[in-house]
Image 1 (spheres, rainbow, N blue to C red):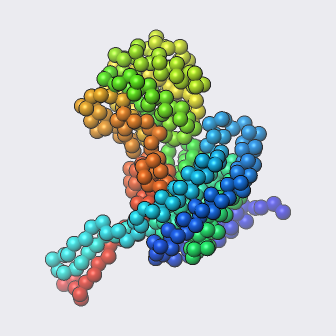
Image 2 (image 1 turned 135 degrees about the vertical axis):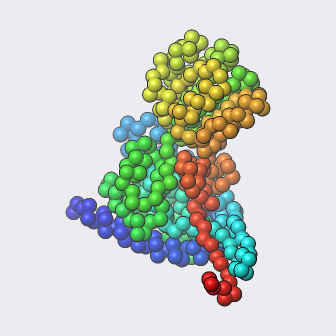
Image 3 (image 1 turned 45 degrees about the vertical axis):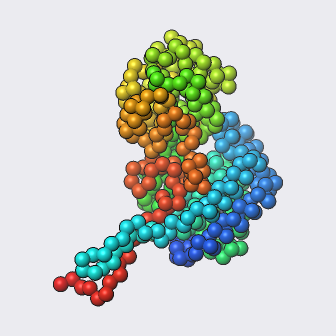
Length: 422
């Protein structure tokens, strides 16, 4: 019997109600219980590598059949090391402080009222994501630690992997006393499920999307629920005229090729005209040898052999082994280019000039800005946050890697002794 749109709406309504009920329990759950659950889940994930990889193999086979790119298949794959990394991330989250109940500000009013602002869970978090199965455990783990119920809706390309991870997560959490519906995954791959989820404003407090422009645009257009957008990563590296050539070469290669299919990989390389002749040919040789397609401005093509870049290339998130390159005359030209064409995600300068570094850090309007380091570090795990829900490019609520503190709101607690307004 075919599943109807009404069936999907009824299923999602039940998931939303169950999540809201679970969130009421989670907000008062002790740190000891939450941490024990996270460690139990980590242990179970390590022990279930064979089962997880069997499920993942189904997704990889389907992805190859659909013609997914090498970079997309890489995002999808669950290797031994990646499963260990997921488990390690949960252990790190367990070791982090519990943000719930943290006092941000407190004072005594002249009338004697004791006023405190404290962190609280948001409540129910809906997460819509594509491709990367690790998001299932990362997001659920961060939400559990911060006292939030989670509804997960992963992409169809990772349905077997996501379902397998979620099953282990729920089993490990419930075994330690966490409510059964604290973490729920939507198993239907019907696109109508996303639309139904976005209408559950009575049950869900915030939606966090991770995916391509099409998915994010749809969510922003259709959602009745507040959205913390995790938009595309058009990330830049600018090589200044004072840059150390060897450092610039290593950073540029790492930022592009370490994992080309992720949102913090470099998509555009900017090079100061004074050093283009010395640094660009070596960087181009490294990238070309590794299979990277280069697209350059007119001046870039005076120094290296590459495809002419178009205006569209400067705004493109390739998520693949493709890089656009532009020669600039000044630091300010580089800054202007990044602020105009970038997605305000992650941008870096390679320089030996303190003044240029400080100017770049101050002027670039992005969530993360680097001096002499690869943009690939924009990651909750790398920042010591255990994991992340995603990289927020919002300016309200949270920005950059969104982890435990980003999953909390605040409330004021006021203690009095009979005070009244006269």
